[in-house]
Every structure is written in structure tokens, then in C-alpha cells.
Length: 281
Image (cartoon, rainbow, N blue to C red; front, top):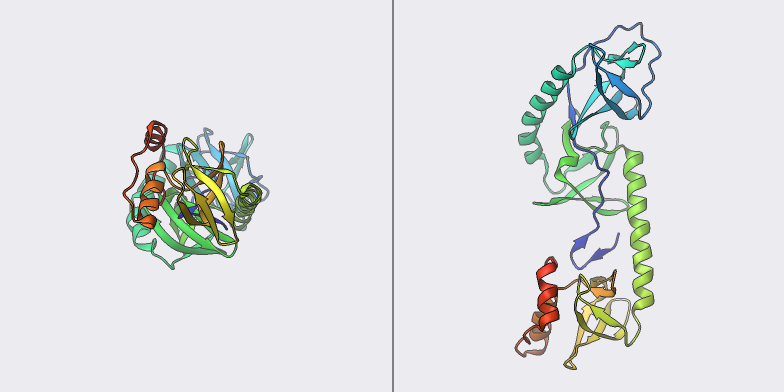
């Protein structure tokens, strides 16, 4: 998957970490219980517990709301008139989830190390390996590319480090991310023609114009007439058009380093640009 000057595409399924909870036994007489995705689940008192978010094999993930989920064995569900149920109250389930989460945090920190295998929510398949752990997320490398996931998407399952995606969900999300990256690549390729303005990361400042482009590098002519070669991977499409993954100030510093001349003071547009842009990594 394409990386833009140190940026790794991020995508998220909007799911909190799945926290393992003790199985809560139900009457085995409930032979046929609907546990399809989207089905409402009720507690032992008939109150709504949550909604089934995934069901594969022997495990069922129930979304409890408030950013919490719980994985339960499929055979722990019984059947009420209004739908599937478990043999515990919602308060008991939430308490068990919170207790498990507290214990999992220390284990999760220890497990999130580069090279560690990351399994799917049910622990049956390995989705990829940890590549980098940062304050704003975890970069996972997979056979189809790299992706940054929020730390909350990881948990410690019975098989070890896991994420809150099934193998199918992860594959679909990666396909979506890679399709978007391919479309962006095509748009960048079409825009990299001589004379095209190159804007800063958020598009507020014009850094220069494309002079020439190859598969690996792009030469940009600055307003002062200097030519600077930038890696092809540093270019992306912003709402304002072709852009490079630099703020105006970062670009000025890079030009100064390349030419050996003092960095020019940013004009008002560049200064405004610098206040709204995050530094490129």
C-alpha cells in the first residue's frame, strides 16, 4: 500500500477492542438461536444487552454500546420470546468486561511489540504483524499492505494478541484502503506534468511548480527559481489539487538545506498555512 512521505494510510472499522469474558452457561435446550449480525441480545432479566456484531464458529461478539464489546461462546446463549439471551444481567456483564479490560491493558502493552503476530477477533487467523507502535496508533503490516489501527482495536485473546476484526472484515477494509490509494496514485500521476502548481500539505500555500517527474522523483521549481528534487512518494492529491507532504515552513527548510542558502521567511499565506497543518512525519 502506498505511503506518503512517512504517512501510513489509516482506516478504522469503528469498533472498540473486544474483551474476553467468562462463558455464561445457558440451557442447552435452546438448540436454534438466531445469532446473526444485527440481532439484539437480552440479559437474564429480559433487558436489552446489546447487538451481535460478528458471529463466526464457536464465538459471538456482542456490542454492548459505550465503546464496549464482549466475546461469548455461541453455546452460552439461550432463547427468549424477544430473542437470544444469556444467563447474566447487563450490570454483571459490564462489570466483567471492565474487570477484564483493566487486566488486559498491562498484557496488551507487553504484547504490542514489533514483529508480534496479530490475529483476527476469533483467534483463528493471523492478519499480520506489528510493525510500529506509536502514541496515535499501531501500524500493522499485512500481505496486502500496511495500515494504522487505533490501539483500542487490539486486545489479548486466548490465542494471544488480536484485533477486533474478523479475517473477512479486515480483508474488505484493506481492499477499500488499497483501492482508494490506487485512485489517488492515478490522480497524482495525471497531475505530475510540467507547470502544475505544487501546494503544501493542506493546500494553503503554493510551494512551486513541477519541472519534471519520473517514477522515483519529482523536480519542483520554487518561486525563487531553485530546483528541488523530492521523492515521488511525497506527492498526494489534496482538495486544492496536487500537493506535497510538507508544510510551507518544512519545505522552505528543505530547500535551504538543499541549496545551502538561508531559509526565506514565510509570507502571510505560508504562515497561515503553517498554523493549520500538522508536520509531516
